[in-house]
Length: 165
Image (cartoon, rainbow, N blue to C red; front, top):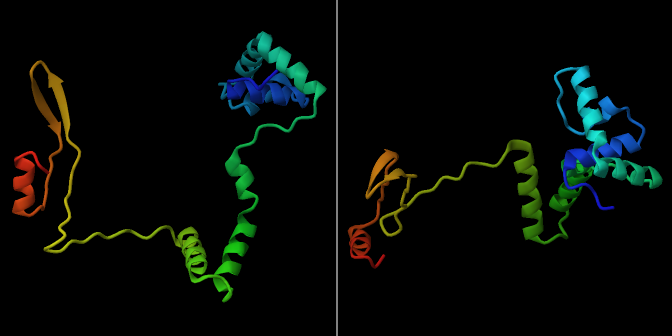
């Protein structure tokens, strides 16, 4: 039998197969009951489902590891990952691009990504487009919020007005 398609059901089945009580398995699966009685009732109902019962029996016959969040697994390697990045960064034999990438990754991890400041000039202006929400009713529309701005030079605005830009 494949894993149950509902993740909480699968986690419940795995916890039950591993020997957890019904209420503990129910909570371990990610359910948040109001109290112990709600956990008992929810777990009882869940275990009544034929596919859940079958999965628990199948898992009891096998020695499967429970589903774990990938982020939790990745965090186990945080120290090693930082050491690898630091080693690459200080190794003079590594290509410059690799050293720079490692340095940037370490700085981003330590201080957060720096803000990107955009600037334009006379030949390369920056256009700013803001979100416009329009409510459509009948043949017309009603502006709810927002507007659009542009700093395009007149020739670009003319091209847009003529439908060629």
